[in-house]
Length: 115
Length: 112
Image (cartoon, rainbow over all chains, first blue to last red):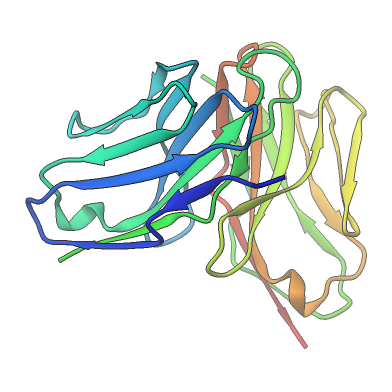
């Protein structure tokens, strides 16, 4: 069974440009989560989509947005890029949106560098 | 709101030493608890999980027991290897499945 996939692996943009990151969940998973992992350890929650709807949003400005497609894949868009947006962006998928264990399965991430 | 607290790192151990990484949580309802591991340059992998009080999750020699009375889920391994060097994240799924929360992570370095 294929795991969560993300593309591209690396992305280099200049300040002010827009970046689009893509994620395909594990087959059958309906929930997709996006996290930002800047230099250091912590994961900062960005967005949660389930069944095509945005269910929750972390403490990020509106220039971070996304969507989930009918096939449950997802896209994260970052507009007006700033240097501090440079980070590893991780996508995770989950089968359960409520109840049960609900563990998340992570993709390898997209490394975004803003120059 | 729900939260997870982990011991500060980095943790540096010699090979074959005993490992404990402390994790405590605050949550409403009855959360599920997880440990994830992130090896250098990779995404996060689920290491183990526990869904109810007194459950013990185990994998690759690592264990953690869900202690409701102390709201803890400490990670242990009896004999660490150099290959265990990674960042370890404690996490919970609480709020009746609506809220996935990660701790800040603990970096472990195992020296030969």
